[in-house]
Image (cartoon, rainbow, N blue to C red; front, top):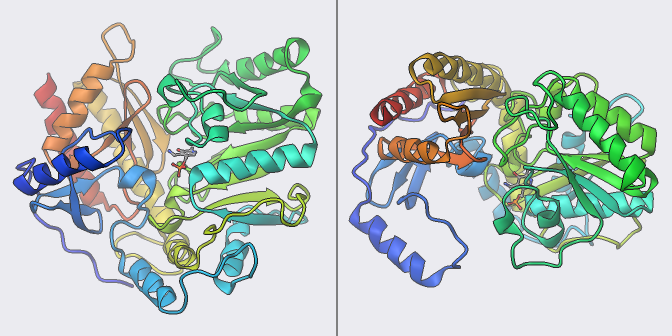
Length: 452
Ligand code: PMP
């Protein structure tokens, strides 16, 4: 059991002079594609707190986009990284096995394997790389080429991944031609049901829509895979209706299609279970992609597949840095905390357990806030994967109000991040305690009152 991190005072006189100076240099020398929505330049972190170069300490409710699972500079993660880096930093996993990645794979498959069903792991460095690997594997295994993705999805920014990504056009404009043979179907969003359906019927409506495409436009026997986020992240932190994923699994089985679950954002304990698809009874994909929360911020990703599916030939796919041992050490330490092999003080049995418990507390509190703030149209999610959607009086999405709310929260000391058209995502480190959550909720309430 580790010592409880100290809780500093929130100070929010932003932006300070050092922040402004670094932001100016940043604007001169870094890629013009980077967004800079908030004036914040981190200096150091501890637990759920981040302090900037001017000494302002902020409460972190976004965890570097659902990455910093164990918070900042977790002593157990730091120790694991330090120990591995003094042994060796790199050899190359494509050519030589290394025990630390072998044992990581053994550990990861335990969370998906069922009796009589073995899984294997391919390691990469980023979410997009895991997605590329999944698509290549599905095509190679099935001998088919077509991939179906969803509207509102985000799968990364490499060529294959941006083709699959079904959200903002800025990711695609001017970058084509993209990957051929990719189609997009609606995502069953119960708050804004597609295809003229209702919250209850939108899952079935999307299934019927795909079957309709198979009769008219896309021959089902040319479809290699359907890729979907079991809970949609960048698109707005959306949870599909309970019947949808089991029906999608059955559809894939009917047509010999690989089902890929992109768990890059919602996976690794964030939803209160190891994988977000595990909230849906009996559903098992053929391929899973994970990244973000896997190693507390060290760059590593994984593509897991059933052994019966991972049939690509020796040497056909690889990555020089993929499965880097230092990142793998951080992944082991992260799993120790997620599984509860190592206990984090104040977080119950495990971080996964804490994500479920404290996440439920946050969700209940936010739902209660809807009475005071009618513009909070929807509160949804699971565990510490929570979306807060802002609406106009007519119920349409209010992106402007969301932006104002996000900035008001930031100015009061809460690091947060938008997603979708009008959503603030709440994706804090999974070590967040109930008290820290209450502090964040108080900041949110105060910020929302200032908007009225
Ligand atoms: N898939 C999902 C579901 C994601 O949310 C993201 C990143 N937001 C990616 C893939 C791409 O990950 P990366 O940025 O590490 O390439």
